[in-house]
Length: 404
Image (tube, rainbow, N blue to C red; front, side, top):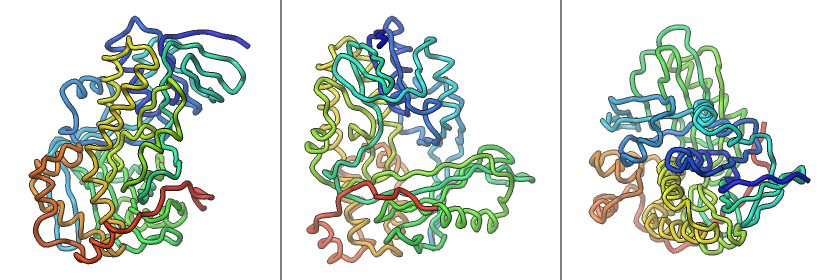
């Protein structure tokens, strides 16, 4: 058994783990860091997007070195009977560009890929092959785990990157196109469906079919067929350059303390979705991953146990301040009939642009919350009250995550 050490070992090379490693490299280059990833590259196979208004100046600076797609002319949303262009600039980052920047900007030997972890402890990490990486601080960034303590639904999606033979003519993202058929694929129960479109170049477009679904079942064949239909209908057929799939939690409530306890390893800090740093309704993680990375860099001299306690307190604070979005999620899944769920989003996108920006960043003011809940409700009042009085289903991993 070989042993080698470092100051900070980060387990999980996804968005949260990678940004922490980058923040430490920028602000604390004196520290020896190891970013341990089980897959072949950091970041996996994902695309992360966000609004420019989501990030502070320090957050923008942290992401400056990444090759990103930019749309400064805003974005569109489409619903039956309503279309709107909002002026908030939008950004997107692919996992391949994320991984390339980490390899370029981190010290040689920092990123360890293809390394499965068998055990974590406050003083180090044991790899599957029996070797151990000793560390003063260990951070668990391995992603969301279903413990049975949280409740809600799921965001299920499949995306496809296409090169069109002719210029597609789309000049800004379509964040939600809910003019599509609202019937969910077989096995998903009820769902709110929309298509997400990113023009990545004159001949390149990323199209994602997304469902706010009762079930985490991902039917690859059905979603692929629906993407085919959307591409044909909009003249976007072409060469397939890549694809991605995902199943993300939409958290509406539960026992957060129990969720933390179920995953706790004494003295090990927990970050990312595994630590609860997620927008409960949109499943966005990037703004919170950036905030957490900067916080870790500021507190990098703390002993591992103290850093773990500090991040646990931050996650409890995040849970508390995002209660409003969990309430809206309960209304979405419990009060709105599946084929009518789009009405909630259509009404929301009729509100003021600054309110929408603060909503996505999870910084809604009291006035914002009152405005969202006021006026003619998009769901029946009695169904809304019943949803709030009913215990939502627990978030549990499916026996089969997806079907072909």
